Amino acid sequence: MKRALLLPLRLVALTFLGGLMVSGCLKSTEPQPSTLQLNGSWNYTGIQTGPVRETLSGTLSISRESGTSFEGRVDLVAVNSQTGQSRVLGGLVSGSESGSDVIDFDADVEANPRRHVGQMVADTISGTWVGSATDGTMSSGTFRVERVSQ
Image (tube, rainbow, N blue to C red; front, side):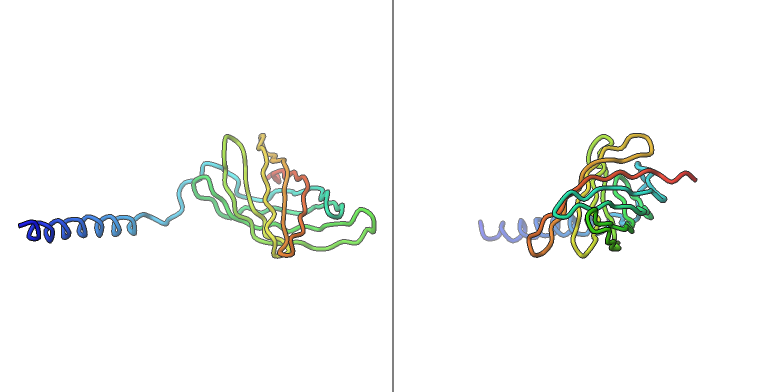
């Protein structure tokens, strides 16, 4: 008798789990209404404090938002403070609001992610960033982005 009960119980469990899997697949992947309102262009300024001191300037463009997440692109010019040599940095950005007015995003420049964490006040986000290269070299600095008026 015990064996006869196990088969129906297994079928019920498999049916239930199958239903959960299907319902999980049916969740919408459509963008959700944004709560951030970050879309558009932002002027980016910053300082790289290590390993080499550089000034950073350029544009952060937010092109897609969904809920508390966003995506875009950053295009910067980095100028070495000692030599005056410049280099171009650019890459994709993805991030989110991680707390009340705290914006957290990664910028993939030089094939290395730079994690930015900043406080948003009105149309300005300012904070710090840190990056790491595949060879273990660390870089860090500060940043400020201001919304370009439309």
